[in-house]
Image (cartoon, rainbow, N blue to C red):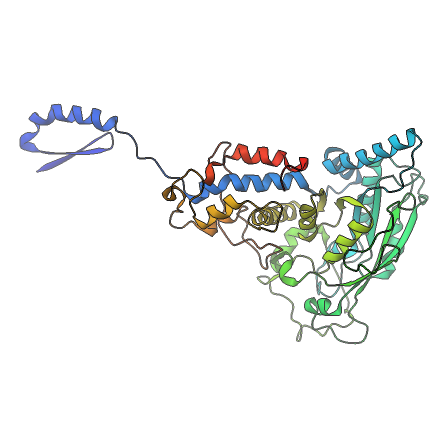
Length: 467
């Protein structure tokens, strides 16, 4: 008969006949086994990637701020008082006041752009791909009043701000868009108003509404009203996408709408939680609607665009360029397209989300995008060490065995958010993956890089040290 006696993790085997003679050996074995060095645990890929994930989150915090609609203008004003976009506006106004104090007139001025798009202000609860939601007057009012309250403007529009009010291709929205710009006595504030015409291509509209039929039913013309205190001092300049035109003309486009695979998708049945009260009841028939037999309503499990009515990428680029934009306030934040462009251009973006669920899901989607920018050699955030790490290559002082991913790792660990990807990827696509937890400060990366090194690198971004 043989006995097994655990001794500090070691298994010591004795026969009954030798029990007495082995007692001393048992004690000695305990000492030897107890002092044996533990086999070092090699870091798996999740551990190595974790600081990069944390870095992606810090990049988002640096450039992108998402807030949840508080439901009041006071709440929105408080957000601007706390957030960096409000500080940026104050800096612009301070620069103007300094110029005025020395009698110098600024012939060219920079602006924070405040955008309200009726097409993205909410969603219709039926046939939403064919129509925008009913005009949300209270939502618009608290957005406008909240920003005006923060700036302290009472009798006129503030300096340093340009308001871009897009009618969602429903031209009857014009008067309603201007209604909240009033003083405490409810009198209209004096303002400079420019009427722009934004056209989209029929082919890109067809890609989203391919079953629409009839004459003049596929709307592709949007009115955008630019409001400011005075005539914007931006200087005349050539367009980015049409060098033969300048910002002297009010016509823009036609531009392609973002491709369906470039915009954020979610499950149809999840939209109610994401939109909340911004999912607006809609009735009646839509002109050009072929009916549900030819154009079926999406099932709850189908992946669909979060918003069907986003603005063209080229329009965002042209408006920023032609009107000297240095930051975005997006009251109708719905998709990832404009945050992507703001990150690319290194300008701050502030977006107002419909619900906490919308805020959380969009934050994860943006973090996914940033993580993939770190792997894109054409992006200014590109990090070769991360690319090598994801491939399992040996980099820096670590041996090949230390950087070899464990079984079950691989690109699945590259999703920094843990969010189940809900459909077509936006921009630089993020793979489906299980989450990886954020690393603690000092965790060593492939290449010997540590998370505090990455955060120090982040601090250098605005100083122009990282390109």
